[in-house]
Length: 122
Image (tube, rainbow, N blue to C red; front, side):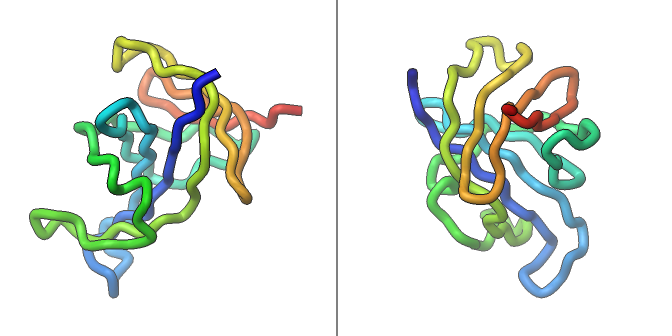
């Protein structure tokens, strides 16, 4: 089974402000990351969260703790990161179901129909 990386970034207008607060979910996919914008952090066994697809992001975001976003588009800070198990479908609009793990967030991540949820593996 192929193991790849994932990260959840808090994205704000600036380092000092929580204005325009949202979260970016990135999944490693070869030379880039598939990315979705989330209004809140999905909770394990919690309600589904809106997930809006974004253009692919660069792989370097998987290794950053926090950084300015290019083009004066704000500030991003790591909230969670870890590995995921499973493969991403070729079709970027297809349903995704993968197992994610990190030191403080793990479960089955499901993305589809512009919604995201994490289900406990128990």
